[in-house]
Amino acid sequence: MKKILSLVLVVTVIASMLAVFSLHTSAADNKTLTITCRGETLAELPVGSEFIFRVGINSGGYTVNAADGEVRYDSNYVQVVEYGTTRSSGEINMDAYSFPASIRNSSLASSYTTAKNQILYNFVKLNKGGVGTFSDVNAHYFKVRFKAIAPGTTEVKHYFHDLVHIEGKDNLRLIHNSKPNDKLDPIPYSVETAEAAAGYVGDADGDWQLTVMDATFIQYLSAGRDSTYNLISADVNGDGEVNLRDALNLLRYRAKMNYDGNVGEWIFLSEQ
Image 1 (cartoon, rainbow, N blue to C red):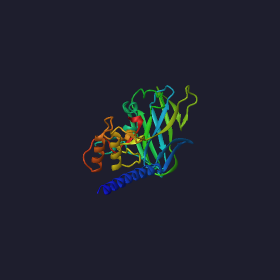
Image 2 (image 1 turned 45 degrees about the horizontal axis):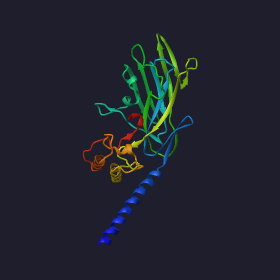
Image 3 (image 1 turned 60 degrees about the horizontal axis):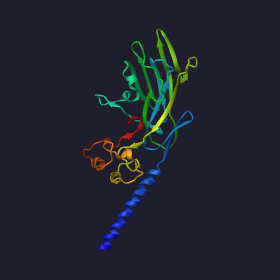
């Protein structure tokens, strides 16, 4: 009897090890998508994951009164993720996510539309004054979430049709057709970046799926053992700790029961 129990235990351990190996092999073999912009590689990320395309500008010390631009992409490789606050109508208010508070809270009239392979936007200041000067290109002027849907290499570009400073009755184009006004000192410029997701809430083993194995790995972490698993994703309920409550919440999520946390949300370090 003892020999049978020992054999069962050995088989169970081997099966668990093979399952772990299989999961990590599949994660390592995930196909990747390379995001470029004007010949520069911005990010490489697994197909199925999300990323943020962000535009930063330095307006050369000028306030911004109006802007008109677009983001172009290939829908064969990426798709726009509707992310933002929810209006009373049930629609997603993507303006609330894509534009920074300095634009959204400055009495501007703004619009944001999506079409095949492009996002169009514009805003204009309705009264005197403008949005404060943009001086840090790392602070986004405009951003949007995308999902990688196919492997390969694809380009995502941002174009300024116009970036305008208004003084009195005069309009001063800071950027036009993506070309900065080289008569200004300093010359305004923009920078495009892409931020890959740092994790996926609940995906402790890093295979971009939510399985019982993730709950097992979370228990492993909560026991204080060293691990290479994704700690930021293992904190399911977002309380800053990894413990058995996280494993329980993940299991409740899989069982379609009430749970705490944002299971299945993509994690971006810039938004933590």
